[in-house]
Length: 144
Image 1 (tube, rainbow, N blue to C red):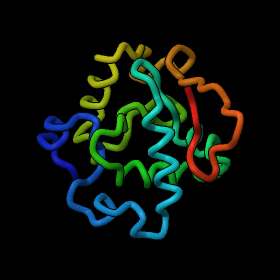
Image 2: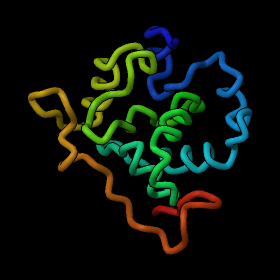
Image 3: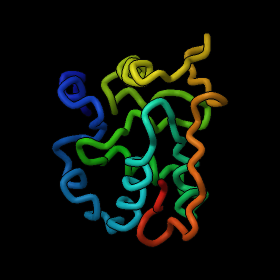
Image 4: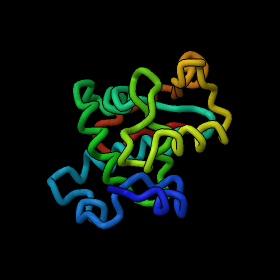
């Protein structure tokens, strides 16, 4: 598990820093999949969020939301992992950022709107990327 102090040092780093998959995302044979996920996540603008399922669909793998979540748990430093949430607008599991409150604070600092129930206002904040002319299945998406 990642300790809150580690997250505080690098707030956009959601991965477990000592795992071998964090050093080599392809260690489980998922190099291409992980790179595609990270390429899409890197394009989510501040003030917007994307869901695990949305990322999977952009990759042409609409049933791979859980695999996207696994890729996010192994993400490299510097990736804006805090901008990826579940379809209900809820924060990542506790062990990723140390606490859901920490991820919420990062998002609030970027202007993300929250509803009274603590979930993200997905109608206002869901990223709506332009659909690229090609596809996102081989080398990642080429979003503007």
